[in-house]
Image (cartoon, rainbow, N blue to C red; front, side, top):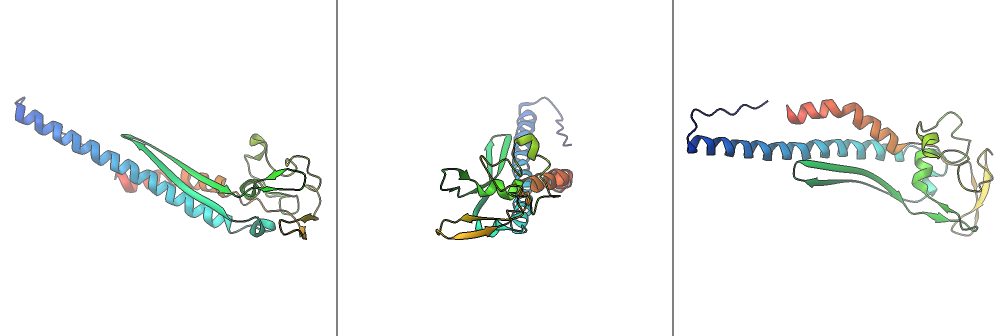
Length: 181
């Protein structure tokens, strides 16, 4: 906590106290932004590591775009950890979003005992892809964007966003103490 003392109610002392308050406000806003950025850097690191750790078709699903956006409106600092990917449309017009497969898994082979704790609550997970026919098969064939048949056992749920969120939450107090002292 910071204490600002004034020795008298003179104009000079009050102006000095106002200047100190404005400096404190500026420092607090900067530290707030540093705090949010440190959390975001941790989230990016954890999510990136998880994205590269999966088994199955994860490497064939394409690239991802992982970013952390900070918005600041004075004293309020907002932030978003965002994962996107290029969707694929199959021959029946169904859209498949790779980032959902990375987060919640696709197929039972890799996901018998590995499940995102938020899957049921959010309506995702093995067997939730619209009109799917192979979610509970250990393997299946699909026609790729290259026009060839590929064997699939699905994609392991590596949960990059869930894991990043948990780690950011777990490290929140440590990071706050480092930045705010």
